[in-house]
Image (cartoon, rainbow, N blue to C red):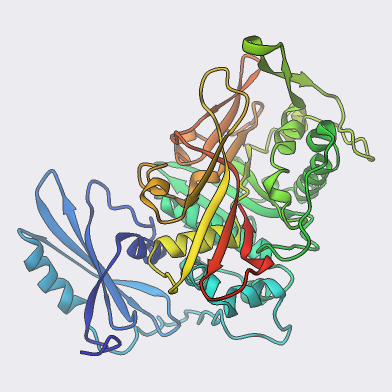
Length: 466
């Protein structure tokens, strides 16, 4: 049979199926069962997996098919079966290879194709994503995340293709993070952007990018380095940029909306203001939120980190520091941050899922948080993406949510339970100190992903941040 035979069933990696399964209500999470094997029909008209419940020793199946607008639709669950062979026999039939795509339900809006340029044309970032072999893995990952969105607004595709590329990519990243952790994600209202639910807890989330009027992502443009002065980096222009963006969102009073009132509300923010900025701007955010500048005191073995209270940021506008100290913002439960809503992240996740153009190499270089008691400096790393050593940094390999951070407001009227977003790093105040809690032994603080396609010259656009 030819590789694109619509009836041919071929095995795929667990990670590739998990990317498809982001379209499921709770993502690739199957309670006590885990994926035993996964398959695709033809060129991707259908896919499915065999699940194993280790306690019962039973196998079940799950089958999905593409809709006419390419969305995945769950069409069958079977079992239990006593052997994987009988489960595969059932799955082979239930995927219905060769059948036409699933129809739209009555009244369902057909989702616009991601790759069809609109009247506004395309940005350099989208062109890089859509037309370079080195970014094919990212294109596949972006496409699947777009198809997994519950209800994107009418401007989503045109925004992603043009000047709001960074903002829309950040939304896709958040969707992947949430679904990966088994959260139900809803987009039943125009705003805020998401409502996440799990185990009886929920939270409304509005996504924003700092300085989003000129978003730049994907490593395009002149690299912008961190300010050399440490105080400027912590409490100067980078902190003011976060402050103005957050305050602008808070002025919209999302918490007063009927569907948000009385519930947890958070703002998710990323910094796309310049190429390379998110490699170094992250530490300015907690300085502003808690009104504490991270300093070091002592010498040698007695060095330790301390928090120095600050009343105002040191930028030209003198914005008051300590958003979380202001009782007027008790309705803001937390600020969610990540520096990984980038093409580099999507490229790595697509690469790890199995989309690997011949000759494409990815090297990730960066710094890890050193959790050794008393350690004040990060740990350097440089590893090939896909290598066993790279994958062994985390129990399940690289995940979407590993760079996600939740900064909790100590005065929140409606706090967010930590276990609502278990894969994030949580920052919180305890007895005057800011502490963190995370499930990850290795947390990447910042990184650069170098791309090299054999047979082609080095390209400055093939270096991506975070």
